[in-house]
Image (cartoon, rainbow, N blue to C red; front, top):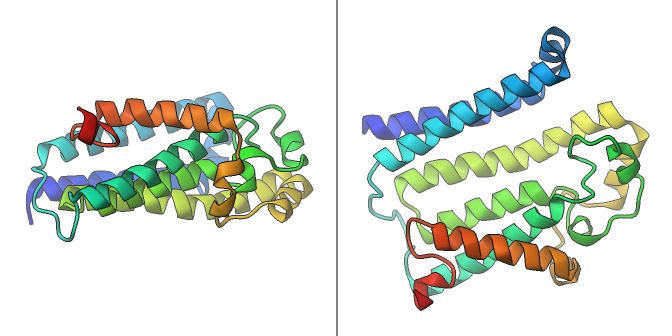
Length: 223
């Protein structure tokens, strides 16, 4: 096996594994030893280092030949639409999200879900998962498959583990939030999430696809 591909697999494993380890089994001990601020500093440093390793290994590996489909206009249109929805979910998740570390997170969990939270209680995680799915469909090369699978596993398994952690940390407030929301996205509600989420998501999508190393989104056709 190509050593650069091995490095990418190792980096992706380290990225996902370090997130899971520090967010769950090691978190309590690290917080006791380092304090909350120290824990967040180490968490951020380790995550950033693993991400840089992934990026360097990814760009060092040649794109290769798609293992199935990919690159056709039809597939790219579908992948672009999926990515747009992913960005809408991500953008909407940045406001009023009880899963994010914030002083009023517990209070937010007791409110009726609105916006993207009517689609799923994990809009950020599902945004990442849909991003991964779009890339698996549009460019199923070895390097993209490795990274997309890593991001998808981190998002969807991480969302499940987050539910357990939040139940322990927030108790009844999170149990109530779970009762009022869904892990699995109810995509029929995506067009009712509100104009701000759509505008912010579309802006992120346009910028990200414009900066893409390959023509993506509308830029594939309009230059």
